Length: 99
Image 1 (cartoon, rainbow, N blue to C red):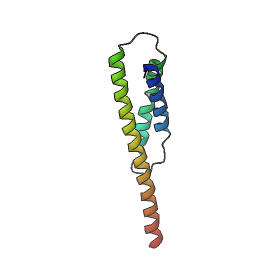
Image 2 (spheres, rainbow, N blue to C red):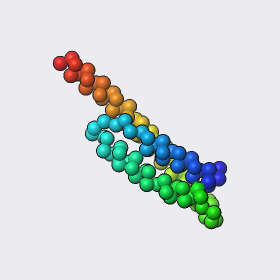
Image 3 (cartoon, rainbow, N blue to C red):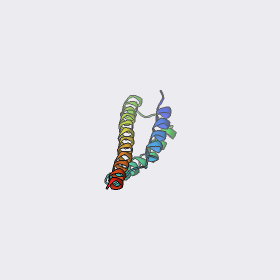
Image 4 (cartoon, rainbow, N blue to C red):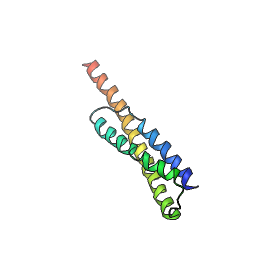
């Protein structure tokens, strides 16, 4: 996999992660901060994708692969929090309805 292809994959991953926005309090603020900070990576990733200069290929690929793994973990975390938020809402509505 080339550096350009990996940068494109990372850009799409960041955009996908940023689109996960169905969070409820108390985690909503933290999830929004994480999404916002990940979006700050987009200009750097676009520069890497468009870069014509010869960057140290091995170290660059290692760093990008590490970033890819971190982004996958961030995505999993945000999806998990989103699912837990929905379960929490259903539970709270059931408790208030039963009362």
